[in-house]
Image (tube, rainbow, N blue to C red; front, side, top):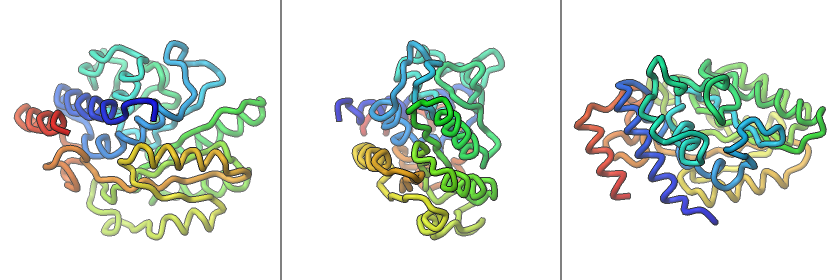
Length: 270
């Protein structure tokens, strides 16, 4: 890979912890699990211009799991959309970095999200608009596995396949946990790969913390014609901080100053 992705993801994880700790609220678990996915997209795969965030030919990204905004903001800051120091204003009333992404205020955010389950429908609309306008951009939709329990995701999945939206590439942050427990305890989505295939999708499964594997899967998705692709990214919630990993309690809990210091020390040693 042409970029030093280890350095990028390490910086993003540091930014996630620092910004959530400064805010005193936020969602560290799912932000850390999706970090490598967003880093790969913004630094390796997406055709974007940080100096021109609204460039009409850019690839689009819909962070359907909008509560993982700290990870998106970290990726955008590292990519040069806005100064990194802005990250420490997360969730402050005067900040352009709110608890969920806001496309009207934050450079690089293509869609305001937060109500789970809606992102794939929006991605479909963006892809259909691109087709009608003769554009060749791709639309990436990053979903959480908890929200895949929602009916709107499956309605959108039918639509993606029906319209042959091969410029929709969905990536599932499959960390197996959600706010109330494990996916299997709350409402199992297994076997998610077979379910999407039955809806007419091409489906790939990768290690969601292996940037090269994610990049290769995106390349394969782009070679797929006539149907959308789902990349199931097997991840660990809280990845990179040992006491947060696979712990459902870190879904939406900010670390204390002492916990943040411990987390940053672990990230520095990665």
